[in-house]
Structures are given as C-alpha cells and as structure tokens.
Length: 266
Ligand SMILES: O=C(O)CCC(=O)C(=O)O
Image 1: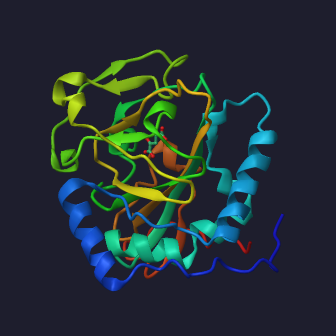
Image 2 (image 1 turned 90 degrees about the horizontal axis):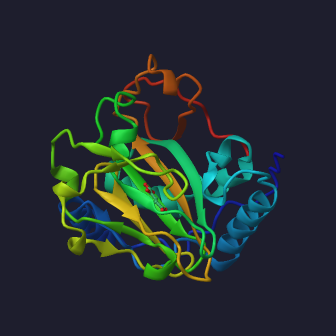
Image 3 (image 1 turned 120 degrees about the horizontal axis):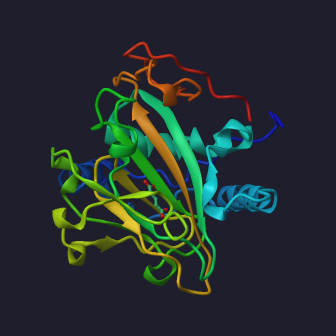
C-alpha cells in the first residue's frame, strides 16, 4: 500500500512558540491540555477521516472501538502520525527525542458504544517502559466529541500521584477494558470533559486518571489516539507484550538505545 507520491501534511496550523510554552506549563500542572485549534489542514483531515472510514468498512467482526495499531497495516497513517504539526506539539511536551508508541481509532457507535473505564494508561503498560512521565497521547476528534456521545474525561492533576491504585473487574460487554480504577481514589464530579469539534485534539499524560462515558446518543464518536514516548525512556525488550510491539523513531536521538524501526514511506 506504499504510495510515496503523497504530499506531507501541511504545517499551516503550527502554534507559536509562546503558545507551545503555555501548553507545556498547563500540561505539567494538570496532566492534560486542549490546544483549541485544528491539528491538520482541512484537506489533510478529510484524508485521514477517509482512511478511518475505509478501515471501519473493512473491520469485519471486530468492534468499532478495536481498531488498534492500524499503522502496522496501513502506512498511509504515518503521513499524520509523523507530521510536523503533530511532532512540534509532542516535542513541546516530551522533548525532542520522539518515538511513536502506538495508535488506535476508538469509535463508539451510536447508542451501543461502550464505556471506557477510569484508568491510567501507565497501569496497562506497567513493566514495559522504565518511566511513565514522558508518554503523551494526542486524542484527535474524528467526529464531534460531546458528553452525550462519550467524550474523553479526566481528573486534573492526578498524573503526579504515585500510588499503586487498586483496579476492580468490570463487564467487557459494556466496557472497553476488563478492569477499572477503584472509585475511592477520586471524585467523579471533578472530571473535566473534553468536548471537541472534529480535527481538534486533547493531549494527556500517560499517568492521568481518565475514561469516557458510553455513547447514549445517535451521534457516532470516533477519536484517533496517537501515542508518543520520549526515546530517553528505556523499553523493556524482555516484557512479553513488547516482543512484537513496534517502536518507531520519528524525531531526534534514540537516547536509550532502544530497538526502533524507521517509519515506512507513505
Ligand atoms: O477514547 C476513549 O474512550 C478513551 C481513550 C483513552 O483511554 C486514551 O486515549 O488513553
């Protein structure tokens, strides 16, 4: 599927240095930021959305929220994952040495989209990376993302709590994972809901408490999570989940000498 004639993403939406500094300050304090501007040009976003629609059409029996690591199969996604506007934002948060950790289209179908349980991403990646303070996820709205269709929500400031939190079992028929962070550690009323228009994004720290309500509305809710790790972090190659995991070197130096791959030509 390699199509090397495709143009790279345009950089017209690059935030100013001042804005990047402000975003970083908020991210450090709260564990998230909402840049409040389109991530891609309109034609680039339309192209990404068309790729998602084609993957959704071809997903077979999989659930719509299970299009995980689509970039392993579809190199066209690297146009977006490795684009200048995205890497400039990521660099302002985790520094100049950037690896692509993962990506996932999480689509909640009207009325049936499952709840995303409260969790820390870092809990699910425990033992796979030596530190979790330099993992950032860009959550890009493909559809309008509102409270009623299950937008992302976070508990601000929880990224700096260093406890080993208890998780409880939940039903996979109604939840996207089988465990959820115990409710005694936070007050759901403190949640900030990330209501986003298409092509707008949030960025969150891998340690923040977050989740999403089920989609109880008639409006589909899809987000593309693009996950980045600083290449100063050491990936534990002996962890079974890392055996077939691919880390792509996108920018800067491979400081911790991790096993990395070069992004494919798109
Ligand atoms: O999109 C969702 O419902 C959850 C996303 C999430 O948990 C994440 O991006 O880490």
